[in-house]
Structures are given as C-alpha cells and as structure tokens.
Length: 441
Ligand SMILES: [Cu+2]
Image 1 (cartoon, rainbow, N blue to C red):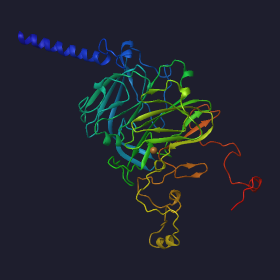
Image 2 (tube, rainbow, N blue to C red):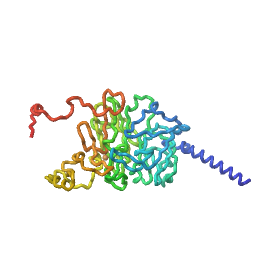
Image 3 (tube, helix red, strand yellow):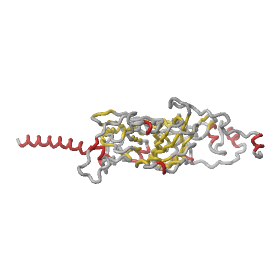
Image 4 (tube, protein in one colour):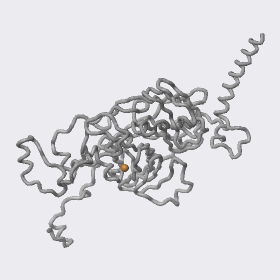
C-alpha cells in the first residue's frame, strides 16, 4: 500500500512539474519588478502573426525563410545543424556545416509577441547549442553550453521555447565551440516584425543579408576556421558575382538589414548612389529618425546587426560592398612577391619555352589575372570577378548590386541597367577638350 501511494505521488509530482515547467517558460513570476522583457506579451497572449496581414515578408537574396507550422498558438520551427555541400560561387563548392542545408541557415521570420518552439536536431559529428543573439528571453533558453544548458549531443534534438517580445533584427548561432562552428557556417538571421496592419507604414522592400568570412585554401573544399587570412568574404553565403541583385522600384522605401557573424572583421558596407539612415540595431530601433545623420557607409561590427533605410529615388545599378578592399577580392593569395610596376621584358617569352602559356601576373595590378587564361586548381575562384555590360572586373567577394528601376511590374531581376543615351562616362571628344581648354598630354 505504501508503495502504491509513493508511485501515485511520484506520478503526480512528475505531472505537476511538467505543467509548472510549461507555465514557467511562458509566464514571468508574479509581481516581477521591474517587469521581465517578455512579460507584456506573455500576459497578452497574441495570436501568431500572419505574413501579409501583420507584416510584409522580408526578402533573402540567395536564401530562404524557415518554414513553420502552428500548434496550439505556437509557431513550431525545426533547425537541423548538419554537414552540407555549399556552393559559394560557380567554381567553388565547399564541404562545411549549415542549418537545414544552407549557410547561412534559413531566416527565422516572426512577428513581435509570437510564441515559438524551435526544435534543434544535431546531425554534426560534435555537440552544439543554439544561441538567439539579441533576443530578450529567459536565461535557460540562451543556448550557452555549460553555463545555461548542457550541450546537444550528436543525434539528439533539443527544444527551445520562448516568446519574441520585441520587433527587431537578431541572429542565431552555436554558443559551443563558437570559433569552429560559426567559422564552418553555422549562422543565421532572425527578423521579428512589428505588427503593422497598414502596408503603407511598412517598408516596400525589406532585405536580410548575413555577412561572413572564410578561409578556403585554393584547391581545397574544407573551410579552415583556424586561419585568419579570410580569402572568401560572403553576403548570404555567396561571393560576387554569385550574389543575387536586390531589386526595388523607384519610390520604394527600402530597408537593408545586415548581420555580421564573421570571425574577426567588422565590415564597412558602402552603398553607391544613396545616403541612408541607420534606423535600428540588434538592440532596438531609433526613436526619432529625423535626428539621425545620413550615412553612405554602415559599419557592421562582428556580432551586431544594422538596419539601413532609404528612399529608392535614384534609378540605376548601384553597387554596395565592403569598403575594406581586400574583402572585395575572391581567394586572393597573400604570399606573393610585389610585382607592381615591374618591367619583365622578354622574360615571359623565355619561360614559355619551358612552361607553355606562362604569363607574369600582377605587374599592373590584379586585373590581368582575370583574363590570363592560366590554369587554376580545380574548385577554386582566384580572381573571379564581376562581368558587367562594360567589361570584366576583379570586383568580387562581399559585394552585390541594388537595381532601382522605373516602370517595373515585378521584382524579378530586370537585368543590366539601360543607361539613358549620353549619360555614361566616355572618351572626351576633341570639341569637349577644346571647349574646356584641356590639353592632351
Ligand atoms: Cu569587409
């Protein structure tokens, strides 16, 4: 009899613990002062936010948004950390790690006040966790191995359950062996939209871009997180020319949200043709946009998000890129002798007798390397550059193009900009030189 009572008590205890645990995750303690960040949303119990009705979904160039289902008022997501094959550009595939088949992982897109259950399955050969960078949640969901939770062993699935209390832009990444796991590509963006029923008050175009950096030695397929030379600099896991252009209509209000989970480098991203305002970070939003200083370059520090806003009032093909010049090159070698300005005379001809097709490179900069025709190791993209309507360039890496167009019906890539006649820089004519008193040297 005593045994039976013990068993019944044990079952009751287990049951009440489960119920208590669920309540505890959703509700703050009574009389919490100051209120917990998620208290208002926990008490309000909003229905799950709906795309289009509550917010305009963001656009992820070269990427995608995470799928979810709704169960008992919760948005249920499933992330799988796993080995992947990832194409950084045509000619370079890497064997690395990602979430749900990609690096960065899919954008987690929700509305403020949404309750989520995020299942994380670990298919890596090593333990992991997931940290929800910038999201104000209770400490037990913070994803720091050892400090706030045990690791997720290979083969296991953990559940993270919390409320997204504030609209904003955040990120997710492992907080276990972070240097290795982020370096291998386990990174992702989170957008929590404000619930705004009036589409007029939302941005017309809302882009999400994750900045990242890798060391991938020429001819190899495995990123090396231990190395800090970083010869591959990506936007949403791609280098220019593989980055998918951003398209906006003339008159659109455009947001570009940049997150940076590079290992070591802050990236100053410069947009041509526009000035913009930095209206938000992973900490929140500017309370009064009118007092913000207009910028043309936004510095996105490691472990931070910057949200930029501008009015698309200047049609054209506008490049935006990291302004660290080594970050807009693809797989540039760093151990070459400096050949700039060197006159090699008939050296090439002599060496060609020994090595057919030989050409000394680098005497005039890097451009000649794009057209040298010299064989390169398989699976490598040294000097792969952008091929535009006016020619080939060495511009690659952390760069992309914003295409702003008049009279477009869709946001499909409209192709290269058709410049109005006479509006492109061109060789000066004799009449022009004479008109302005310029002497040819
Ligand atoms: Cu950079």
